[in-house]
Image (cartoon, rainbow, N blue to C red; front, side, top):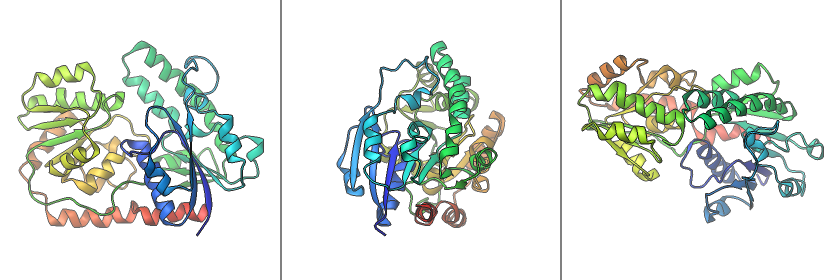
Length: 370
């Protein structure tokens, strides 16, 4: 194909070990396989430059986030104004290739007059102001709560910059519908992920499993809900894996014999636990975007129990047992722990997932646009 594309990433996408960067990394991988020459621009803050990206990209530029910015002042969102670097603009102006901005985070230069004649695409990972409003709701620290509230307001105002995009790529049907109500050129581009085939195994596992970045309020809340409301009233073993659990969660887990907390698990260890579990439990209290861990557990694990917010408008509800209250979740756990996962279930997953979440098929949407 030999088409050139600039990609501006909000973070270093390698290793692909959390939501947003998983989508970025596996999208880059598919574009590279398709013969696209990628010029990658990375705002890094703690994740080291690596050789892997050089193998997939023609060129990789790194920029430091402007951490000294006061997060409470200014009209621009903090996540945007800290990713403002004149060197990035100069590098984008070195040719006339299309540009893909990953998330509103990276859109500081989207409406720059010097780029007005360029194809400019935006990948939306969330409805960001909704996402930050939900973070505010679950946050207990006063300063963080105030920051999330202010950031949500600023993001709502800033989102209007999307009128300058040639095309907006939404990550979920829900987000696609919402963005279409405000902007004209919106296309659904499903999430990219690590899985190429369904690897779930039939039979029984011995425990239930929940994982997530526990430093994120949403995941910490979900884990505490499982401990307090669900598994404290059962004798079914639960393993929770994730980095930086809150002191409250650690204390709750230590009081119960059937729950184990696995801190700082590697991606390989999480994948192994996902596959070994009899049930992956996935409650969420945040319905924006799409939960990549839902896709992963459906490709890799056995039974999945989720709530409506986790599966809403994903087309994946029929592959999960839905439980919206603690009581419903306890009942589903007791029932499914007795039921072996079957080859028939695996076949159903293959058919459903290959239709909607096939990376090599979905990359054609982006290739047609660029």
